[in-house]
Image 1 (spheres, rainbow, N blue to C red):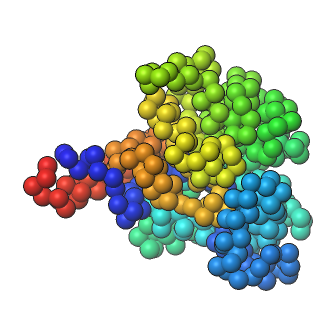
Image 2 (image 1 turned 45 degrees about the vertical axis):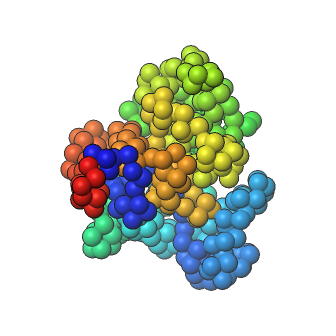
Length: 375
Ligand SMILES: [Zn+2]
């Protein structure tokens, strides 16, 4: 079983079944689609219409360390997604792209309230995106790539429409909307501002995650869990502030970190994005390594594939390069994510038993077969 300590090749990483819990619809467009939708809708504020240049511009802007430039990237993607047709197309392509990358289950999120500039109603927006995901799933399956895509609806922290969006999520929960999230600036907008929405969701037995502990520290994580009742944490990187690592490598957990680990609270970590926003200094310095070692319920995610120029495979490649992660590690992260999905229990188990475990087993035996005599 020597092969198990080897790092997987990029091709193996791509073929390995992957599960994605944190991905923004308006952060994952193809650069060519941004340019085409802009041309079709008369949107004239793009920095360039050259597709390759545009892709680079998005990554550079997100890399710049300037919040203004980072936010500008979303003004363009959101700007070209203001029609029903655009939403259907973007959602369909997202499903196709994820499937082609070896993602077998994804929860993609977006804030419906951002797509009302040209008069679309909230329900119309949700229906368009669901139509797009279904179409993308069909096209991917025809290509031999099976993916299941579910939706999380986000409310924006600063807009005070959280209850309305929570009700929207519950209204569409039997049509592919798996849960709710709250996004937007953490500083100055604590999750407790939206307590009504979270209480409503809990009364409805509905699922939700909260962006917390990305830009802001432990209080934000604590409020999200203990006041709001979040089932998962978007990012949650700052939980490391409650962990002391001694010189001998042993770790001492504060009460909050202990609670998060004891309760198997899923952390939706997005390594490349966390580096771009300054939540982590580099991939090599990302807390994911420590948290994986301490066996927190860590998951690996993309956040914004366009702005970070990334994919699930790319994230795993970077982690494997930085920390020597093997197929076993990848499977561990993937099972963590599947166990934490807002999909019914029986469907999660089916994906684990029928797709994920056999997928990794096949890759492992191939690995051994390629290196005969070395095991
Ligand atoms: Zn996010």
